Image (cartoon, rainbow, N blue to C red; front, side, top):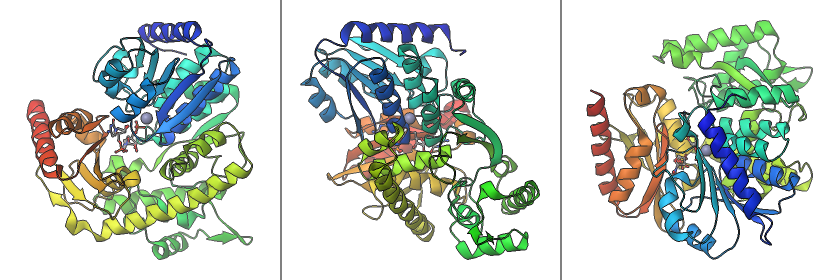
Length: 473
Ligand code: C5P
Ligand code: C5P
Ligand code: ZN
């Protein structure tokens, strides 16, 4: 695998720290994020550590806030943070000074060093952590130094897909290297196809209905139109009494559908680049059973996000580690609920566009109690990719949390990032201004702030983003 020499050295240091600190009577504590990338990252580490003979305990958290760090401070032994940590080094260094710590992350780092341990972050080695490697990818780079585990590359790619690192239709950088290892190990296959949602498990008309990135004008969210659209293209909804899935189409049907979709998007003012991103690399986990959500990387990632949303990340990790019994069955139930909930959210967004405020450099929407904070980021992404808003600018979405605070999610596009926008940096500054906690990537970021501070936070965001625009000129 081609990885920068400085990163290779950092990974060796981390493995050395594991060797010297683990096995002193305390299990290694793995702490990860509760989304698809975080859950797969946790599973990669858990699996590799067990294989190498290191006992470990694994948990996934919504956010690494000071409360969680303080709780960890009371424990003993090595902690490995993955898919989070780089934005919280200040709290880690201040509160966890007794414990050894390894951070394996791809978020934009706030500080560079861990005072007692090892900080391994993609950005510190010239790698773009928003596109070229995910948290699960960073965990995999570490895992493959701990033991022989090329099969775990499949989970690493599910993590990358969960973080939408394939949104341009190609995998690049470290993700590409990981894919090559997975192909060589016979666990995955990459091919060009339509990037519709639910290739393996959804009737094609449903896959069209549920695809929102890119947004399919007149089709996304509208079942009747999807059925009519396929009929006009002479593609049957059912064949031999079975629903036709994307995976079942003949090459000619696939071609017909592709051309028609791209044309429809372009007729609806969607830029050609975005329209063409409907075709791209899709990953099949070839050792998984056909027509199950585990077979397609995107569906696998959604299954993990469902586990995260319902706070059953342990179930997600168990499925990643191979459970195909009762736990897997229960996770499928959560997936169904999650999908239904997302489609309700989508309907809510499209019928509440009047609640979106145009704040000049950014659009803002406060969903209050109407949308769960667990999916407010997904909803911000839907709003952005729906192109329902007149201009292309970043979207900020707020939702109340159960513990009386407010969750904020920000989403941008590649074009906006190229024109100088860095949401992670802006949100870090704005959250600090109101005494909250935030961070993330240039293209997607989040924060948690106190109720009542939304307006001040928004003003700070507008001024930060304005500065970013001006700096780029
Ligand atoms: O915490 P983490 O890094 O796992 O999350 C990354 C987030 O960024 C995901 O929620 C993903 O959906 C979002 N993202 C996005 N658009 C992109 C890339 C990432 O909304 N192009
Ligand atoms: O929660 P959401 O999906 O909006 O998060 C977008 C990105 O911002 C994720 O990568 C997430 O890890 C990051 N984030 C963060 N600090 C927070 C909230 C989110 O770094 N307090
Ligand atoms: Zn991640």
